[in-house]
Image 1: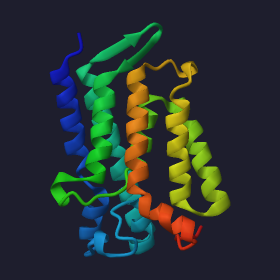
Image 2 (image 1 turned 180 degrees about the vertical axis):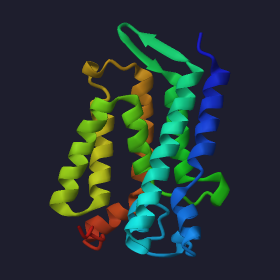
Image 3 (image 1 turned 135 degrees about the vertical axis):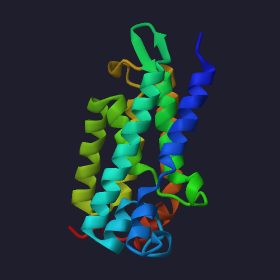
Image 4 (image 1 turned 120 degrees about the vertical axis):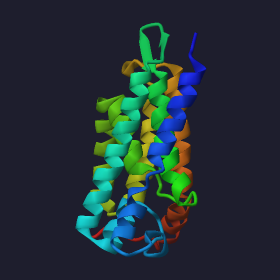
Length: 207
């Protein structure tokens, strides 16, 4: 029987960790409200554009570390689901989902956060590093060719949701639900980017 209380605890703990929005915190250290500059998104890409490489490095480290911390916490709760030869740690999935949701809608910063891509990628690496490498490869190729970070993120997220259903990965349907929900969250947060991509006004990344 699945321990629902532990799942809820994992989700809540992941959310509270994810709500530590690094871009907002680093922006305050630099004397700027990152949500009022550039694309107004409290994430890595906007931090790089507005505050520069050193600030972006801090945001990258913070977003990765909170994703890892949330996943380790979920893993420690040890709630598993089995289906044939497939197995998934449900408390890990819940904590990872909470971290992404918290990053996007942080409780500490008026629910104005980032778009969940970096934290989501970190969570994916904690869940299945091989699948994560496949998605990361597609992201890097698309960004290198087009210089659109948003396009790379959207395509990699859609790829993640699609390939999660392949039995070769050895995951349960709980993982499929997680993959689809996380893809929906990330893509919804990028809806303005989609509009700008379609209109040809999306900002390109300067290497």
